[in-house]
Image (tube, rainbow, N blue to C red):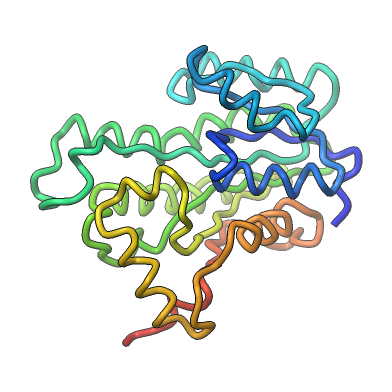
Length: 254
């Protein structure tokens, strides 16, 4: 997949072990020109170090809960040309709302998880649209099977992923007439720094590896490869889809 002369914005690179970093590395290796966002000044240096070898065209501050900043990101990056793709890889829940009883989720915790992990996709797509290449573009986000099945310990993040997946479908319908595609990649449990804070995460990986048809867990590279497909013209007929990259675990009943 050749991304030469293709330009995109990545929301969510945290460190070299994040899914967004793996996707960015594959995009960069295939010729893409990338802009990256960082949430605030405290996180600028870690993001800058993580992406320095990808020759970023822009590094822009953006709190994804600040719609004005989102709009400014797209305006700034598009000054040098239209945008072909966007990667949304943003998720967060308060530590006390992961693990324990789901019924103990606080209202503030519910709002935080849903706003950061699901809502942020909506203004990102809205403000990306005016700057997307006239030939069309592709936007992807990252989800997990806990959107429709119970993963003890994942708790409120499962609810957030369910909201995110429905938002993908709503946005795919709304922006389809503008030839903007919106899809999600549902990755198996990958060992990111954030994921390791989820109670029972190691058990998730063990069970996935033993129960999946491929008898193993997936890699960051496999998730990145599927992401590249969805961001490329090869997937021009796909929108509103939730694509699993889970070694087949999701098809199993027992």
